[in-house]
Image (cartoon, rainbow, N blue to C red; front, side, top):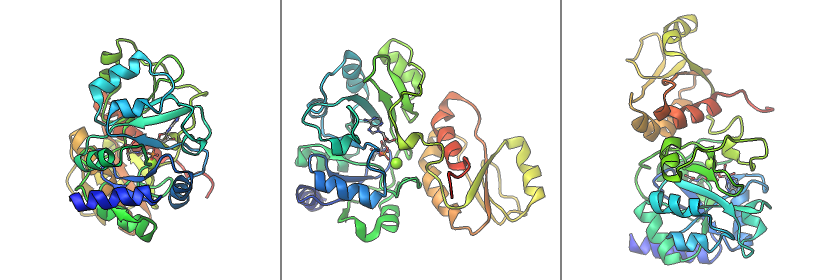
Length: 315
Ligand code: TXA
Ligand code: MG
C-alpha cells in the first residue's frame, strides 16, 4: 500500500490524475494548485469549467490556509465532523486559482476520513481537487472497479480502498454568505449540523452558488427511472411486467430484474450506486424504484433518487 501511496503522490506532483477512495464515494484527484492538471480533470470528467470542485486536505489547518475568512461556525463544524463526510463552502484565499473555484469567490474544502485518502493527502501535503470519479451527471463510483470501468485509461492510477462505507456524497454547507445553508444533503444531517451550530440552517435560495450535485437531473443511470410509492408498486408491475425493480420487498416473479434494497437508510445509501449501476445493465426499458419513507434519515437518499428519476434535460 505504501508503494501505491508514493506512486499516487508522484503522479499528482507531475500533474496527473489519481482516483482514490473516500468514505463517501471515490474521488478523481488532481493537484489543486496546478492549472493544467485541473484542466485535464475537467476534460476527463466532461464537466463544464464553471462548476467548481471540492479541494481535499489532510487536516483542518491546511484546509483553512486556502480560505480567506474562517468563521467560528466553520471551526466548530470542522472540529466536530472532520475528518469526515462534510464539505464547507468558504470565501477563498487569494492564492486559490480561478481554475478550481469555477471563477467563484468561494472554495469547497473537505478533510476525508478514509485511511487511504488520508495517507495520500498527508504525503502530498497540498490540496487535492477531487470531484466524484464518474463522468458528469452519471452515478458516482463506490468501488475501484467501478472507477476503472467508467474512466479506464483516462486516469493514471486508481487506488484501491474497498467499497465506500457511506456510499453517497458529502453533506455540503455554505458558510460563505452569512447564515449557514445546506446545499447538498448527505450522511451528516441538518439536525446534527444545527446542534453544533446552535442555530437553524437557512433555506437554500436562488442566489446559491452553482453546484452540479444540485442540478435537477444528476446521479442518473442510462435507463429511465421512476419513483413509485410502496402502496402503488404492485399495480405498476401489473400494468407493465418485465420492468426492472429496486424495492424493499421480496422479488415478484412477474418482474424480469429485481434488486432488493435494505430497509435501513444508511445501509441503503451504501448500496445505492452499485445497485443503480447493476440494474442499469438489466436491459429493461424502465426501472421502478419503490420510494423510501419521507423521514429525516432518508433525506439524502431521497434527494439522490429524485435527481436520478427527474426528467431528462434536453436529450
Ligand atoms: O463526497 C464528496 O463530496 C465527493 C468526494 C470525492 O469527496 N466529491 C464530490 O465532488 O461529490 P463533486 O464535484 O462530484 O460534487 C461536489 C459538489 C458539486 O455540486 C460542486 O458544484 C459543489 O460541490 N461545489 C464545490 N465547490 C463549490 C463552491 N465553491 N460553491 C458551491 N458549490 C461548490
Ligand atoms: Mg459528482
